[in-house]
Length: 509
Length: 107
Ligand SMILES: [Fe+2]
Ligand SMILES: [Fe+2]
Ligand SMILES: [Zn+2]
Picture 1 (cartoon, rainbow over the protein chains, first blue to last red):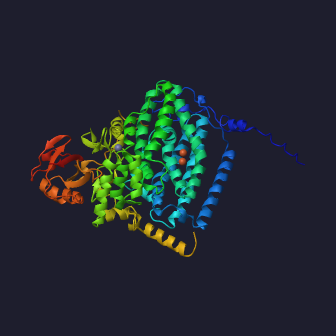
Picture 2 (cartoon, rainbow over the protein chains, first blue to last red):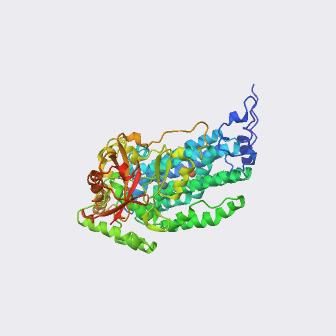
């Protein structure tokens, strides 16, 4: 005879959360705390009391998985419907997908890197609250790359440039910019990573990265990407909260942490901002239907929300706005134009296409940027004449790269948008070049870190990228001739016209 | 300031000159021409005379500009100091180190 077990006592969500975190934590008896958590000392951060970490959100595993499964179900229903109804034909133009090619090649692999390093934090942070928060974020991030890949693989069946993003992320010149950014963060200690990614990337700059891509999707008929964006958004608000809690915790634990945290803010603002150069050109040039200009986005999401809000609060701890922020403010007038002009002349070696802005687009640029007519329009007018004469501006060689951000050295001097900014440092008898005072400052603090940078141009010249000629390198990049170059007349463009022609004739959409 | 790390943190440069054998990297920056978005980077033999470098590497790169004129004269400088390369000069003679930047403006 068995006695029926008593019905389990129902715990409240709060109790279950504390059972999951605090109750599963213990003080070690046969090893020291330092042996159990060996990586939270070497950076010089002082933590007196891990229990002071306020858990900004209290999720349990069952609540988490239930919620995420619902979101996934919605997303996959949208993906199926979009594929079945030939939804891609409702995009504004095939050239819109250049933004998404850049996204999957440049951004999605960073989600995976984030997944890995948050999993590391989920093991190695001393406090149970932050460990569990890191675990949730680690799960979010692997879900992000997975759903992004599924969302965009629909386009891979029909369009060029999507096919080899993982391979390319680790090798291609413009993708070394996001890759090296994240490599820098994951090779730092856990606290620097929290400030680099948890705070700077997920809080300070996240709206400048994700809102443009996701609004760009919604303005250009890309329902799958928009749905993915919504599905990630609720995760992002948790990530932002974690980033903010992390910085407040470090600042409140000990005054000695303040200068370290300040340096990391300075460094990671600048590294993140340089990475956003790719977003700036995407907003102003790659979207057929514009959302807002980079200048407006920077003004709203960074100057108003961060400088005008967050940094006012952080001043209480003695934190000041990031070094070189004035340079970023000044650059908002020029950045996107300089970057797109660069991508335009190197797109024969890229997995996306570029084109001269149309007249209407050019008017929008003039209306939004007072310096456009003086500084950039003449270049496009010259290129129009060049194209009319049978040419196309593709550089016949390789550019000088910044040894920190790895971007071709296209940025200009503070106060002079017509002269390229050149900086350099000598370290152990070798010269290193930088695009800006911000990048030089980062190098000068930790030269040992950046001397190992795998700079694509230097590696090509060392013969490590498939060969000495551009076709050799492109083959090694796994780029097909139709993946890059000029958009007009490209495979995507021709297919787009043919599909729409067909749809019109058969009365389809 | 050294990198803070869990053990010794010392790695050789991935761009050091010895990785290029008898060659070196040289940047040429056409300062007053926005047609080119950035300075160009070339790999060239260290013993290469200036006139060969100019005609074999620099001109083929920059003549892609539709306004290029073979008669154009240039004034050169390195990190702000004017230099006047002679036909037989090597990079060392001009003072151009590995990864150095030679600036030029229309004379
Ligand atoms: Fe993410
Ligand atoms: Fe995130
Ligand atoms: Zn840089």
